[in-house]
Length: 364
Image (cartoon, rainbow, N blue to C red):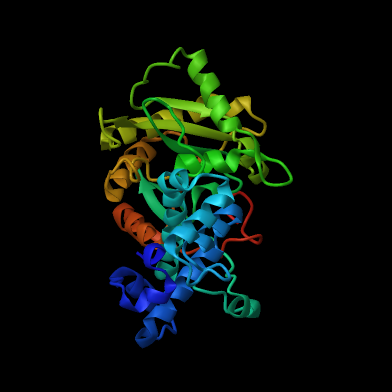
């Protein structure tokens, strides 16, 4: 609605959720809610990078000189960022761009962190720094013995110094396009090799997965749910990631864009990932030791987050490797609260994430 009607018509729009999100930020002046909503959108767009930020600023009218421009003009200018026709942009990148803005709106609403109060330039320039990446330490019990799980609260592609990241996949082991918002798309994007201008010159995660499919004779047919295909990390190696395990949990529903995901398939894929890691452990120097799971199937798969957590716990609780470091990653604090509640562990908030975070659990 904001994209279509523009910033100059905010007060006349019915935007209950954006108003609620803006009002959740400390210091919001709710009787001037159009200003607060605009500030919230500007803060969300400022968290994006490169073409995403430029396209979002243009299509929403947040870029200089575009505030009162017609929606068609703003869309045309945004399409130029990607070198696409207006129609192609409308059907593909624009949905992704607006989805990324929505992700950051949700984050800001959850954390109340519209700006870093320590950054005096943020209020003046409108460019907001990214929030501090967070983690929690969950103290649990497995078979009568203590178990520690590190719960990261940020996008999976920002993980650092975790040996293996598990990425959800469908039975065709097809990676989504890089501009999508899913975990698998973001890991593909983060693993891409880029030139000095930021253009993708290699797509190693995609290429490795295609090679695995060819080697196992499944280039043109689906695999069974629970299958796990290992690949290299691509550019994520610079962040200390050494493997990506593509865990098959989603079964496409014929004739639709939907998937079917069951807790049984999530548990089976998680158990297989752990077994594969044990088998590969000593083939790497140093041996593989840490693994991180997102909430498999809880995105496009439609599985309830609490069901995904419970299914993952089935595999994690049965893991016989007592020395393995276990990690979970979610994007939002509210989901982290749900994970903590489902697992029923005692939670230590841990030190703030960033350069000072202890080695081996970095996510800065």
